Amino acid sequence: MKYFTVGQDSSSGYTGTIDGSHKWILPGVDSCPACKSTWGDNSKAYPSVDLTPVASLADFEEPRAEPIEEYERMRELVRPLLPPGPLLEPGTTLGPLVGRAQGRFGQLASSYPWWLLVQHEALEKLQSEGLRGLKGCRTQLRFRQRNSPELLELELLPTGRLHSDCLPPNRQPPCPRCGYVDITLPDDPLLDAPTLPSHLDVFRLEDISTVIVCTERFAKACQRLGLDGVVFHPVPISGPENRAPR
Image 1 (cartoon, rainbow, N blue to C red):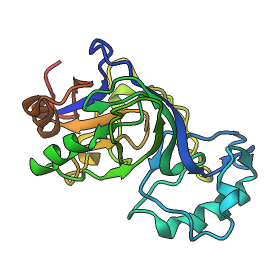
Image 2: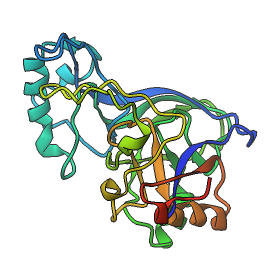
Image 3: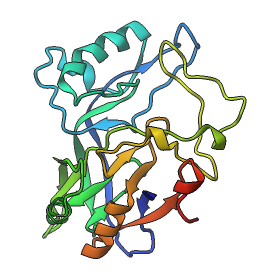
Image 4: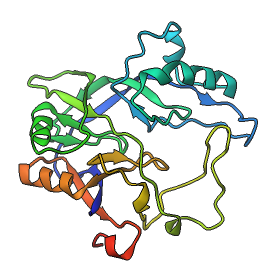
């Protein structure tokens, strides 16, 4: 199986831009007692999640950092509402994408590296191909133009990791309390084959969740159907027999 990263096609001529954020957010952590880090990462998103059953809903509306005990309390309030096996790190966003949009969008769009939007008709075409794990979530984007597209956000579950061979040998393990890890995308990323999902054709990496990865099946289906707006770059996976062409 070959894999690809997914990114915005800057040469496509599309002018679409989005100024928005997800409706709710978990707080970041203010000075973790274990690692002393203050941090939050909003690149992990669960746009299908409806938090309206939560009594203290207003607590999830403003981005901020809190003591870790408060973050952990709020995390457990929302956990039952999420898909199975979620990663609920500080700063995780929830609910629909809300904001303003303008310009021309392709059939697929990745205005931010960690978002993947798709027009409704394009999603139906992809689902008819039998691709796995495609969940389109309604957005609340306001357009100030006629003939605006219906943009859905694909819910990209965090799974799959980078292989240790492409990471610094002296890196520190994740914090056992808050999960913080100091990691940046290497120049030559290598995916760790045993961690890659067998039930998803598009997902985000667990350890660097700004990176969207898809299978060859997904990339070929988009190309065959003429769905534009993004580009696919091959990325190798561990094991010489499984390396994708560079």
